[in-house]
Image 1: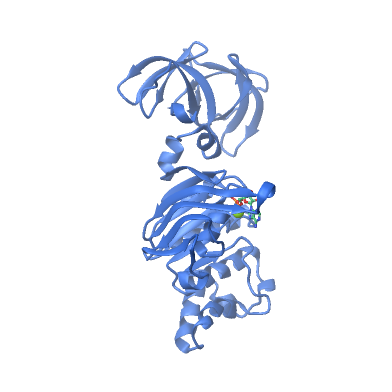
Image 2: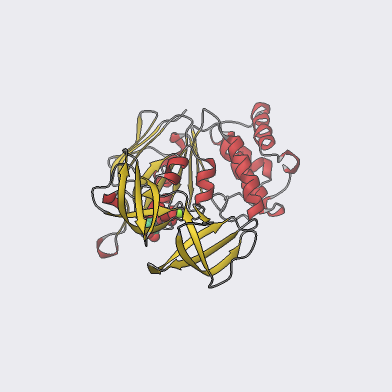
Length: 359
Ligand code: ADP
Ligand code: MG
């Protein structure tokens, strides 16, 4: 069980002119058994938060508490061992001179003597990541994915209150990633909270109960994957998480609280909004998959400047006449390749107005 409470945490590296504010006031609550992903570009402070929770980094301001016990504040620092949280890093950090079995056993021997019961626990942990057959091997006899599974078993064996992952799949190829994602999904347990750092939005959205999007040491938005994808609060979240296109549009009419008609280059379309915009000019965000070819009737004329095949459909990037400088990213369910530099008339099937203060 671990409720992790992070309140106004700040952290600066270095001093004077070379100083860097890595965390500029981060607050969030992670519930018992919850899986929270920290998603953000490189340098946004993800690893720093993770290390602060683990006790590997001291903080300058704010409070971190686990299950109500303060573990970090400017005047107080509980050691990593006493926090009972486990960390899985990208480079798995296995001990090369120890077998797989001994690597997983090692954390248990910090506080206890080796017993049959502990050996049973190690075997269970290895079994849960399907590695029992390889337990007598050494790390250099394992593939990258297998090493990462050893690291996962080693994290789970001590029955930690929380497991903190720092980009655990970053060094694996696509197929291994999927396999490892399954193992991580299986490691989920109502007693273990998970904090999962990644710069890959697919990973974050695939697994997490909630995702915190970080930018420059601050949380931009903390939400469920669905809301984050459908209702980004800012330009940063809209582009980083959803790869959304952001276009200027004009309000034509409103309908109820959460629906608005917009106009762009003579084409009118419906958009969702948090509340009715206060101004006639708004920024609207549109997912690449929210375009379709307009049969008859009106649409947005877009030139297919670049065409990419994507397994089952074509993606194109192109500009519309009204916005010659803005390259739109569009994913179309087309079975015929669009003509490069040809024009397509497209309808917008879903759009979301960015809240004014954050556009
Ligand atoms: P992320 O994991 O999101 O890539 P980090 O938390 O590692 O980001 O780093 C946040 C910022 O703090 C970055 O600009 C990074 O260069 C800086 N930073 C991280 N660790 C140190 C350190 N030990 N000394 C100085 N600066 C650091
Ligand atoms: Mg990092």
